[in-house]
Length: 303
Length: 280
Picture: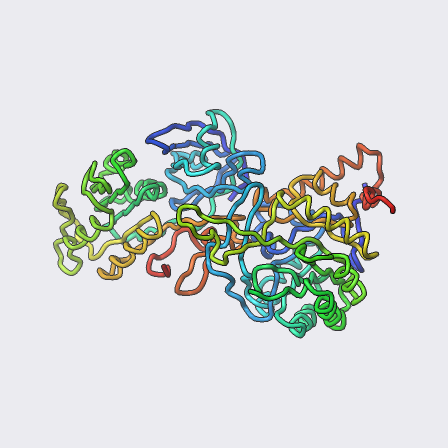
């Protein structure tokens, strides 16, 4: 079965990626799952300086979902390269480093720093909902989104995936803008902001008040945005949002995703990526198909 | 640490809403330490979605047998309470660091608020193995009905002091009231240490060793008070903390607690911390 897919210059053995922020730096999962079978590992977002993140509580479970407000806690790019990248390199799978800047220049700086062997691609996180208060995300404006991508494009020859926010009026115009600015692919969706309240204390459950909603609860929204994005651009789309099973992943592939990312499900079952992969292979066999490319975008109805 | 199936050998109500579960871990030959926890999937669908971190209550004669003590507080624990014997749970563990046991220490104080007793009985099992030791256990709960494990601690030759908020058993008040009172009688500077409270039998510590190590678990408000008392009397203390968890493996940064050296992960850097390190 040919499970390989191509995203930009990056050839993946299979279309299963683990989503940023849900898999740490992979070392945390090394004793519990077979890392080299995963198509690509996306790291937790890395920033220029270390970030301590948001005050706790940072998590609240909702019906079939999870609100999180971690706030990009990470050790910064220098420590990442020194202490985390060597292990990631040794996993034998493609490594995609997620980067998050506060300014356009910071994104460019991070991309330059990561122009190093062992990094297969960069995912530009311009859509984290938990770091900017009362302020627009880079991903919420086509001009700022494009300016980040342009700056990163100038700094690296590596494959660039730009991660967009679902919290926009028209994802298509943002998607077209980042495509034009030189992004090799688009990943959708980042989490959707939500709130949960403790009725006993009459206060929000999260110290940050809002948190990004992930998990099965957001899957239909994610599928809709993948569909819209795929119709708007010709670069590959990577689908994320509530994938728990192989059939969830197949829905994303049918809606035009060239690859999928598994996020919250890693918390439920650290081996989920391998189960999803196996399930897709079985599905393709049952349908008498020769590879995963046969189903990518199959559900899209030509207008 | 393994990700495996665990057979439910016993799942029994021991007090209102309080359950004891005995599990046999499939194909497990590793070691388990008191204070570590298992990340347990209570159901099989998406509500509840996440695993539940539950501390190890007691370790069996072979380490593939573990006991969990839990209170039904939400959907996850409710599902667990309905699971019948001979069915299997999906578990990951043992996780976290566990209690540090000072080999030279012989005076121990255990302070358990409510369900905070869960990880402390297994710890007491370890402490009880020392030949010459003094263990004082202070158990607290809202009412007498919720005081659990008292007999088990006594069976380990610990001196047990009880506090209930309504006074239905032991001292009327909080565990921290009893602790303060106990420590006042527990003179750390002198060679003859006496431990005890007015309403309980007074015990004398035969084998003198200066100071004592305190182990505690309970709600944040209680831990904060215990920390103050420990600071005042310069007592070494370790606390097992509880926080909502995502992965349980140290990856998601969801379960952090604020400490003097920044945010630390309860699942990986803890769940046992030096009490003095926690910023409340």
